[in-house]
Amino acid sequence: MSRDEDNRAISKQAVCSLRKSTAGQQKPLWVRTCRSVHVGWLTAFVGLAGASVAILVTLVLLFEPLTPDVLMGVLWLAFLVIVALGQSVVMSGVGSARLSRFVRPIEVAAAGRGLSVPGRGDFLIRSFIFAFAVLLGFSYFYWRDDEPGRRQFRAEISTLVGAPVGLLWFILGFVIVNRTRISLHPDGIVQEIYRRRVWKVTSDVTVVPWDGIVGLQPQTHPNPAVPHPHQYPTVRVVYREVDSELDQELTLMVCEKKVEPNALLALLQWCRDNPWAREQLAHDDARELLRPPRFLDRIEADRAASMSGRRDVQ
Image 1 (cartoon, rainbow, N blue to C red):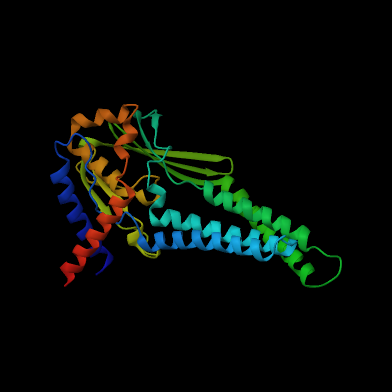
Image 2: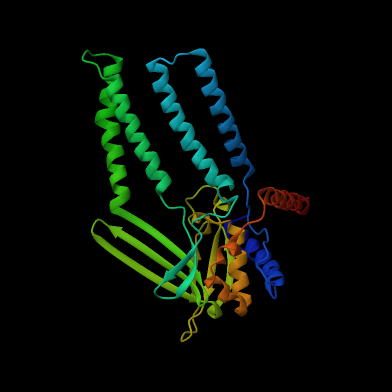
């Protein structure tokens, strides 16, 4: 099945089910339209966590007390394991097992008070880069030797290659910034695209009124170069401005947000179909509208959808 056919199938099924379920509901009704928990990445997360604990315990028992060589190896191993764990947390759905504390009320000049839908940001990546640079520094001082040899070669490589690259990458994360902010307000959806190039800062704000939304279509990632695009859900918002008869589009990259994708889609559909409900987005407890179901319930919903898909194929 091609990507376009896959997107059309997802959109048709999701839109029909959501429209039947959101009209007249007192709260958004969570409906599984895209995969919420990736069992493969979840297994990798559990396996990595268990393996890292087992390795650390084994090293402590076998090499007690730890020699400097073993300690340096453990530090690098821990760094690689933490990087893999961070990736598996994001991809598996564990990161959205609970409602993020960054989902909070926000004031936007163009739309007033509303609910912030925070992005994942680049804090985790910057932390990994900083830890990488620190490890390189420790490695240099440990492996440095006045005599030529293997240790001296490691020190030179980490100093001449690794350190400048890590430092440059870390600095670029602050001087070149691309950030997309999404917030939901009683008047509509607000998207702000923030760009910074050293000292030049630009900001583009798009406001989509609820009454102007023609369709909400869940889709896969629009970039064809992304591997496994079905793991990166997006929402295509088709809207029409008051003084225009032409449809416009806004793609919400829900895969990059700190919220459960199906919960966000349900809230969007609920606010679109129920004008009386939009005022709740300005309340102090509006964040509860994005609270996902229990993690085990989401796993069960994914399993049921997978079994249903297999029966349809057969």
